[in-house]
Each structure stands twice: as structure tokens, then as C-alpha cells.
Amino acid sequence: MNIKYKVKNYLNLTTHTAIGMSLFVWIKLLAKNKFAIDIRYLPKIIFITANILLNTPFQWYEYLRYNRKIKNTKVLRPVFILGHPRSGTTYLQYVLSKDPAFSFCSTNEALTPLTFLSIGGFTKKIMDLSMPETRPQDNVKAGADQPKEEEFAVGSISNTSMVHGFYFPRSLYSVFDETVVFETKNTETLAHWKKNLDYFVKKIIYKYPGKRILLKSPANTGRMKEILELYPDACFIHIHRDPHIVYQSNEKLYEKILPLLGFQKIKNEFIENYIIYSYEKMYKKYLTDKLSIPNKQLYELSYVDFVNSPIEQLEKAYQHLNLGDFEKAKPFFNKEIRDSENYLNNSYIGLDTKTKKLIEEKWSFFFEEYGYNK
Image (cartoon, rainbow, N blue to C red; front, side):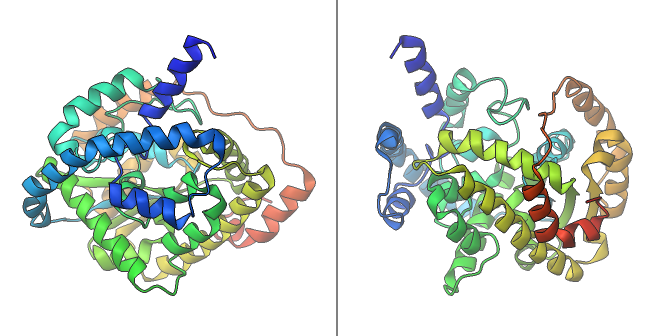
């Protein structure tokens, strides 16, 4: 193994999304999956465990110092970006996060959710040195200060998170059922998820007082009803995209991120079936949930419309949801949109006939709901 390869592997480990996990959560996660770790991933497990052990004293210090203040923080009208992975949620989040009136979960905060108030400056420097300029799954810019899904943070402070399925992909189906659509006999699972999401949200708001929080996690698309139970005044922006492209893009996504995040190897066929399964379940629940969401708390747009006329779509969203002073935020949006002009979309080869037929059969309800052509 040459030096360059060793350095590359080390840098990948320093930005693994489990490095800031609670020791208790880590042990419970390993035990729940019966320590079923492929031998090739043992060095990754050892590194993450060592990192968690080193972080534990700082985690306890931060808890003892800030816990009461965090719990007393109020959450007012949070905004949730919804949409299946690879539907444009990240681009929408990147643009919206430029509104100075919003706070959001950064990559540094998502990866070190238990220590960012105390040693966040130090961990940010480490991430800035070790992170690539763009994300591994696409050409979107990366960095410690860039927005990140709060799902990763919740996965480090609790045992109820979709990201645990990325770490142990053989359990993807059960993790999805338990933590996204809450199909579980354990009534404590939902309460556990709500409690930990709320704690992390309050922690971000505590760090950035006076700002309205903007959150983005594709898994939340299946949790809209539960989020509204937690935050009755929450607002939702749902972005959707041609299902044919979403399927192909998700294949590429899992192909690239599972070797980086996972501790198990699985076959491509397993992932292909999972994409079909999870999309169908999540969107059937979303379409049911949205029937009970007050009109002024949900705005929907298509990826194509957003890419073609982002400012127009954002203005409509601000007006519909009463998100604040659009004109004040507009220059910041324009700058981010200009900076993203060189972003290169992934290219896709046409779907084979069998897969295309399966998608159009299993996801037919979505094609009909949003008018996509089969």
C-alpha cells in the first residue's frame, strides 16, 4: 500500500459520519447488528471506536454545561425540506440556507453533534483539512460549513435514525420501517426519535439565537405527520423529480456512499430492490400525511421548475409559507445560484425495459399524482 493511498484512507475515516457518535449509541448499534462486520471494515470500526472514546469526555462536559439551556430553548416555525434522495433537496437547501434569517445544521455540527458547542472550532479545522472539495456521490461542493442532513446528527445521539441502515446495509429494510415510516410494534421508537430530533434542533437554535431553523433530511418525507405532532407550526417545502431519474441517481448514490459509510458489503440487486421498496412506502405515507397538513404550511415544486426558475419558485414559496423578507434574501440566493452554475449533473444511460416497467408499476401512484410521463 503506497503512502498516497494510506493518506486517502485516513482522510476518509476522519470525516466518517459516525465519528461523533455517543459511546452508548455506538455500542448499542454494534450489538443490535450482532457485530456482523465484514473483515475488510475492521480498521474503520477500530478508528471510529477510538475516536468516540477520545470524544466521550468532551461530550459529557458539553452535556453538563449546556443541557439545561438547550432544553429551555424554544422552537418556532421550523422549515423542513422534503423529497426523496436525489430529487434536488440538497440544491434547494444550499440556496435557501443563504438567507441570513435562517440557521441550519452544518457538516461540522452534523458530524460532531455532542461537542460542537465546546470544541467545534477545532473539529471544523480538521474537517476543512480532510474533506474533499466536492461530495463523493456527485459534484456538489462540500465543506465543514456547508449544510448537512440533521439525520446524521440524530444517528449519532440516538438509536433511531435512517443512517444506521447505511452503516449496516443488510438491515436497511428494518431500519427504514422502524425509523422512517414507523412501522414497529415498539411504541417507544417514535417517542425516542421525537425526543432526540427536538434536542438537536434546540441545540442548533441555541447556538444561533434569533434565527429560524432550516432542516433537510429526505427521510423526513415519510415523517411529515410525526413532525407536525412535534412542531404544529412547522412549514414544509417538498421538491419532486422524474422517478426514472431518481431511481438511476439512487443506484449511483448507494454505489458510492455505502463503501464509504458501511461496515458490510451487499449485492447490487439488494439495493435495487430496496430503492423500489422504500420509495413506494415513503411516498404512499407522504401522500396520505399531506392530506391533513394545513395548506399554508406545505409548498410543493418540481426539480425542473426550480432549476429553470429558482428565484421565481423561491418567491412563491416565501409568499405561500410566509417565510420572511424575500427581497432581503434575494441577493444571497442569486449569488449561490451563480456559484452553482458550473455544477455538473450526473449523466444516466437509459433504464432497461424490465426495470423501467417495474418502476412504472410500483410507483404508478406517484406518476399520476405529479403528472410525470411513463
